[in-house]
Each structure stands twice: as C-alpha cells, then as structure tokens.
Length: 200
Image: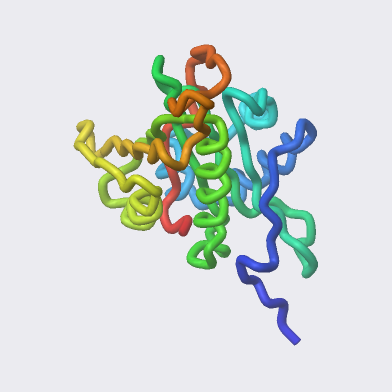
C-alpha cells in the first residue's frame, strides 16, 4: 500500500536547537526556483544560516517546522517557518517554505496557523512579509490571516504584505488594552523576509 503523504502525516512543532543539519538538508532539497522565491534571489543556505534558524528566543522570535510521521522519510523536515521582529511597534516578519513534493497538502497553512497562534498569544499587532508578485500560492495563504492582508508593490517584481492582527484576538490586559511582554528590536535575519510558492 503506498504511503499516504498528506498534511495529517506531519507534525508541526517549534524548531529545536539541534535542527540545523535537518533544516540545511531541507533547503538543499528545494528546487533552485523555490529557493529563489523563498529568499528573493538568495542561493544555498549555509550551515551557519541553518544554525541561525534554530536559535529563536521564543519570546521575540520563533521558528516552526513540519516533520514527517512514518513512511520512508520519517522524521524529515518538509516545511519551515520563521518569525523575526520587524518594527518598533512589535511587528513580526514571517517567512516560510514547504518541500516541493509536499506543496498543496495543507502543510504551509498549518505552519502559518501556528505562527498566527504564537503571534496572537504575544500581542503582536501585525505580521509582515515580502514575496514575488507572481507567487500566488503564498499571497493567497498570507491573505487568509485573521485581519486580512494589505499588499503593495515594492519594486523589482516584489510586493510587501502587511497583515494586521485583530485586537480582540490578541492578549488583553486587565485594563482592556492589547499588551505583550516588553519587546526588544532585533534586525531580521537576511533569510527571513520572503516566502515560498505553493506552501498552502
């Protein structure tokens, strides 16, 4: 009986400190075009960059991976999403990619839902991303954010996507004001500002 490679056959969880080699293998396994779309032209992910993806502080930055359950590729990473601080207002920049052979199976959507839940739980006011304007799959996915998405041209065939998060769904203090822990501004990593095609 063939292996049923569906979204239900993967587990979504936070990236672990020792996931660097697996994340590097994941990005090496993407087609050159998928890497170009994920990183807006950036090439191969180095071991240093892969290790950097595994070091979020879980308060101001976060990472999620989709890992296969069972089958011939058990334990392999087939999807990756990262969140990095993107503004003085506490915004987060989101970027994701899904293995080419697993695109269209709902894995990207599950990763994005994990990112939304993490952001809402920390009072993040908005998410931001950048993508090529013809990346219809990721634009459709990001537009499914609870507050919708505003898309504007950024030049060079790239668009910027802003996703405001509903105040009513964010962490609310006893005074009724949206709040979160004090957030420090950190520059987003060079590889954290785009998304891959067909990751829904």
